[in-house]
Image (cartoon, rainbow, N blue to C red; front, side, top):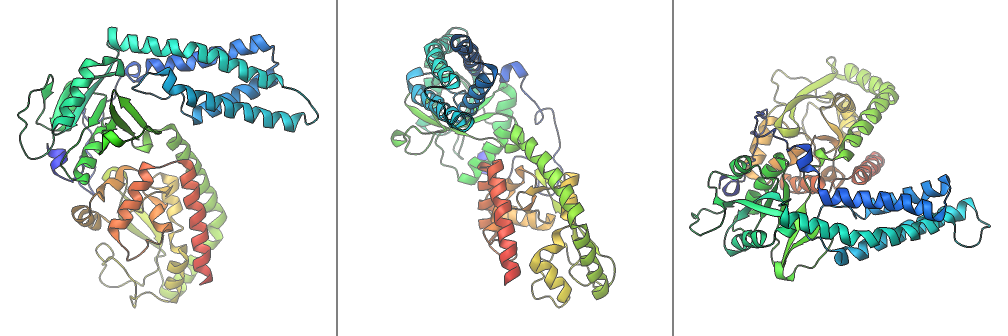
Length: 472
């Protein structure tokens, strides 16, 4: 299988634009993406909330407080998550715990709004009634879900990737137990050896992308494989680019405990892998917030930029702004703007020279600008334009992207999200002439664990680093 035998990205070459085809832009119909069990669980909770209002006679303020607390706690606890194993008893501790958190939140609000009150408030009574009503109906929802998967074949079409007995056992388990919601439709063998085994599904030797397109699969399950991690990661990125859910059978699966993010296919633990964060609603919030913050920062820092520009002119003349081609998300290139910190020379080596540390062309003004990172302030305009984000992997020049992608495992994978003005690698001291492999690890960690809170932490750490650097 091409994607597993080579660590090359399943997309454009670094620095090139990705060609959009019908296959790579295919989206599953909306109804196919809606999970029936998730929809029913949400409906049950909403109906239980309305019924609890009627039973307790709670007024609008109390009902609103209880509703917000319940919605927030159950959303944070992922009570309505998509799942393979539909078991009410397995899910009961999580569901009750989230309702308990909501009860405590309502109690805190009650203490603030009515500090002299005694007894249980109407909002707290509403939460307790909600728990009773909701938990009495949820077993039926799970039973209906299992019945629909078995009898109506409401299952997601799945491709299994891997080698050896583990892949075959996963496929046979899916076939025997459709109540787990996966219908195997194809198998993509990994490794260099040809597959000669017998399976009840088609064996696709043309690669994962072809298998997903041919069978219209919505889920890809990765079994054990003898291939390198970078090769398997390339296949996972391929699955994500097709909008597929990805599940992984972990090593030492017999010893793998149940934990958040782990599901069960009978006796097989499967880990849900998060897709590219750019597909999540939170990423749209990130884009809006960063655009507004960058525009505001440009306005506030305009006098600082003007003073820096004047200093550059007095030291080495015009031009003030330095433009350089960098590689962004999906290998697309853009013009990055900086305040020029290096005196102009007859030969422009900025596209191929890795570092200007110790360069005689960097004068006192340039050294100050680089030490304080003031030369990077014009990149706020790149953020406003959408070329970059405030937080993300730092952009690099095309020649170095090609070189590093060929040498360092998964360097290319960092281009799954927009590049940033600052990043996780930079706040951990990986600036200038430092390890590229370590930068790539931090960048891929950032993508896999992205959240708005992680972005905020990176911004706080960046401010602290800049302050400490200024004091030195």
